[in-house]
Image (tube, rainbow, N blue to C red; front, side, top):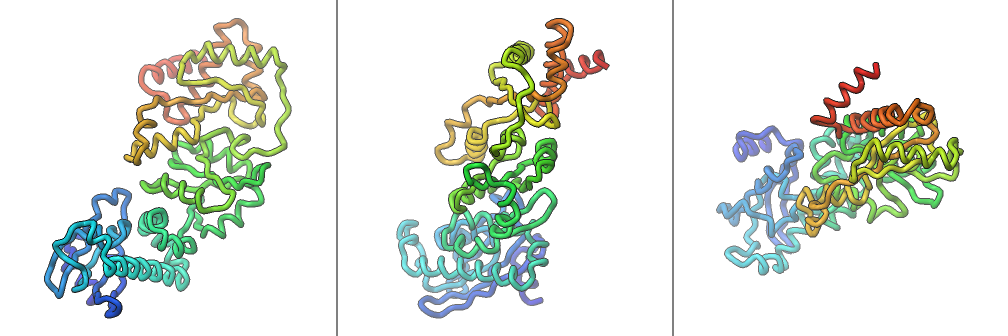
Length: 379
């Protein structure tokens, strides 16, 4: 109760913290304090600079970015230390031996606290994950000393709202999601509603799909690929389900070479958009007739540029490009080939393409109006 009362005095308009850490050390430096774990929201820039720095109980500043690692600035609380040099340059502060020791000490205390909660009460930890996951991931990608411990308690959450440690998840998906070259593929979604059709197709093949929908997840994905051996991550809409994880058992071709050329020609004329490149694939007949995808690498670079990622501005200025994958083994494609006349073929191809766009929220404005009118006429 004393800790909670102190918190309310410091932050009278904030929700109660999830838990807290008491700091007390007198060698090789002097430091006392308490750090509180608030519920961390996706707009975490708003939550920075909430740690108050004191020296011998005299308030100094809330600007502690040179004293604690950046990810710890999401915490609330107070630190009191006479060993932190004041009124010095930023470069001097960063090079100060006591500041470096304080930095390491606080990082270790935070990691140990999270590890302790995870081991003592896994269920309770998982219940808090929605509120602390962003913080843990931020530390995971930005601070190597924190990563060394966090790799055992960072959680991956799938679309069924199940949580796994890194080792647990590898064990779960390795038998099914290893490609023909021995590479383990983790699939993820950034928007389970918009990408639902892709998630369903992946699930139908026995694949699991992770949720990666927070502000930090683009960087978290990159860190996972860097740290996990022979592991890649692909967004579930980066390709059709048959191609996301390359296997040796490819479906047979239904169309002849001449028919394949004809289908591509029909769709190219019906779409006539330079940003959309048509490709014909021999997929499972149960897959959708037309799927629109975006290259994983380019999309990821553009997403990072949109977040202000260093050196990514070039990608942010590039136009969006998409791949239109036509499933040559789907019965609708056969129906298009058999349609009476080029106009009927083009209308069916355009309808199939627009349905693929509609499923991803890419059909808007005049094109959506035209699609509705065409759908009514077809009915």
